[in-house]
Length: 142
Image (cartoon, rainbow, N blue to C red; front, side, top):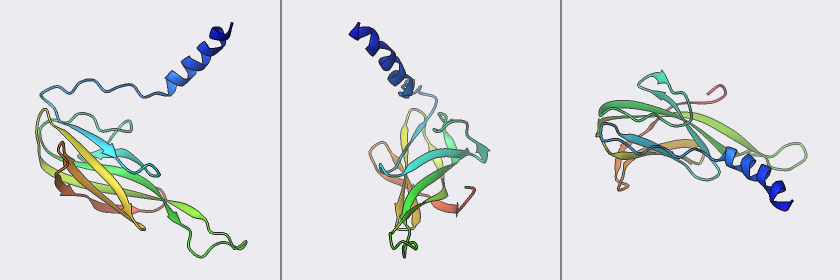
């Protein structure tokens, strides 16, 4: 009886797990997204076109422009009427352009915050910085 009760819980929890990515074929490059635990990052645009989903699709070799949305918490400043301090979420778009995406290679777009400002880098599989992202814009509606 106990195993019958745990079955629905197992099914429910497995539905929340992300499906593993298929192996990378040798004709494409793959870009994964990374940020700190308190932040969120998701793919936004690839070569000016909206991306469906949270990650970038595998890329053809060559030049690409990647845009991500970065969500991060910032301190509220002087506090509210009750005297307590609050935090707010800041939303920004970062873009990086890179001309030499190579087939069969893994890359990482690392997005972070530096105080109130977003920051980002494109790294190769060994962690070498290939390009620095620039802030496109921050604010509501991003």
